[in-house]
Amino acid sequence: MNEDLASRHLNLIQDQRPAVHCLTNTVVQSLTANMLLAVGAIPSMSSDISEVADFTARSQALLVNIGTLDPLRKNAIQAAITSAQENNIPWILDPVLIDRAPVRLAYAQELIKREPAVIRGNAGEISALGSDPKSLARDNRSIVAVTGATDFVTDGNRESTLHVGHELMSRVTGIGCAGTAVLSAFCAVTDTAGHFDAVVAGLHTLGKTGENAARKASGPGAFAATILDEIYFTSQSSSTERPLT
Ligand SMILES: Nc1ncnc2c1ncn2[C@@H]1O[C@H](COP(=O)(O)OP(=O)(O)O)[C@@H](O)[C@H]1O
Ligand SMILES: Cc1ncsc1CCOP(=O)(O)O
Ligand SMILES: [Mg+2]
Image (cartoon, rainbow, N blue to C red; front, side, top):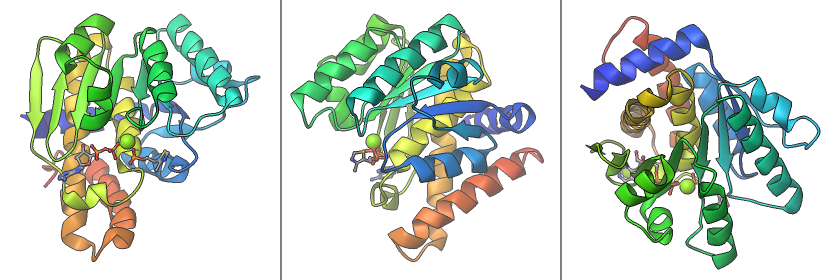
């Protein structure tokens, strides 16, 4: 079932080539842009306050990743979210490392009040928000995805648990961040009602390509390159509707 869901969304991405504007941390920008290109989306990364609203308005999804922050970037994030809301564009939050600093947690909680379409984080990050994933989803009208060895997705009512991925994915910085960008591209080709399925499909695709890459890579260094290849081959094969594995 998730295979077909993923294949259908990958086909839509190949057809629509959605633009995803990414306000993301300085550690993962290159991997994120390359993962979006490999899956068939079109990334942009500007954070200048003079243009960020326009970049967002001309995109089909906005990624907000708070891994590295500064005052200028915070201003850009607020302006981009406003533009996304004004243009009915889904914005997706990756609350990186909010379990490590109270000020970062408080900032993420402020952003969540603006009702992201999706919140994707690892178990430590999501639990730092202080409510269970289903309540968090219901209270903010968001899809919540809690990722790790097992991924859990909820819209506050529906639930999906995914047993995909490989341990090597936790050994390369940016796989989670790039994963949130990939599921943003999946959300970009669906309407709000389709975002639950889009997140499940995006995480299924990420996990299966991670498994494929782990079979071929000798270690984390090769894995970082191989996962790019694998998500590209997967996106290309979706047009012939071959299974992801
Ligand atoms: N131990 C693991 N076993 C299998 N898959 C994993 C494991 N750790 C991470 N992953 C995969 O990597 C993805 C993102 O990793 P995660 O560690 O949750 O994010 P982050 O890097 O933001 O902490 C998950 O959705 C899952 O597919
Ligand atoms: C190490 C680090 N520090 C701030 S952002 C970042 C990258 C986090 O990437 P991911 O959440 O995908 O592991
Ligand atoms: Mg992360």
